[in-house]
Amino acid sequence: MDRFRLDVHASEQDIVGNIAEDVRKGLTSAQKYLLPKYFYDELGSQLFEQITEQPEYYPTRTERSLLSSSARELMERVHPREMVELGSGSSYKTRVLLDAASQNGGLPRYVPFDVSPSIIESSAAALLNEYPTLDIHGVVGDFERHLPEVPPAGGRRLVLFLGSTIGNLRLDERRSLLQQIKLLLDTGDRLLLGVDLVKDVATLEAAYNDEAGVTAEFNLNVLRVINKALGADFRLEEFRHNAHYNHDEARIEMHLMPRSHQTVSIKDLDLTIEFTPEETIHTENSHKFTRETTGSLLEEAGLCLDHWYTDPDNMFGLALAAARP
Image 1 (cartoon, one colour):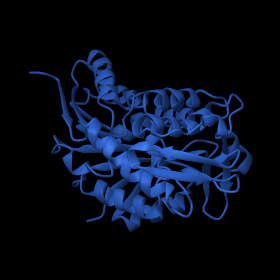
Image 2: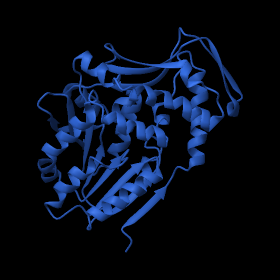
Image 3: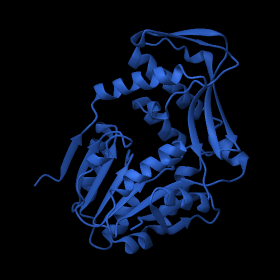
């Protein structure tokens, strides 16, 4: 029996259509904005991998270290028969949990869910070689649209939503997504949610303003994506990266700031946009959490906090949650 299956629910044409709709809405709003999911073409994904290697960017290495120290206890607590990972990417951190499961006979099935078929296929090829008892059922889709397409559970399930990706969403979007995730959970199933924690502003802002300028290039890449996808003529050198902490909202905000007054044409939308140096394009939020705000968010979505893991410096949190009866 073939150990790998891939279900595709979002084609490249679907994705381009979504870009057109989202870009028109975002750039004609009073506060111009672009959605952060459009950072991630092939170059954007490479740039993000480089970001995670920068000395200022603590979240990825801290979360992986926390997973490593918690994995054995976590897997013994949940005893999953399958893992579903939302935004699976390269499945780099997933290996920590797969290794822990291997100590108890291995995990029968892994369900990576990502917008990129190529990243699922490449990571699956590596995982199938490394874990000979593992079957993989990949799902290509947008987790805000296609979560109902996750295949029926093959046993007790652990859903992974790591990287503090939840922090990129607005409050209503966070609540809606967690409500959808709840529908994937049966009795005994669990969600493992990664959240970046509130900490000193200097550490937070440095993580999004690395000295090498990789995050700045990553931020600008959204304009490159729109140029390619929609026939726009953004001049990247005419915009600069800005990232700062918003105390009131407990979040890092990323913006692109025009260096001069300019006019941008988006051919495929038949749209012309004026930009002035006094305005910005809001490209990403990265909300920060505490144990208390994480618990409240879960409760609002019909989930409950079952267990809380954090590192010794309280930099990052892993919330293990269950569906409320």
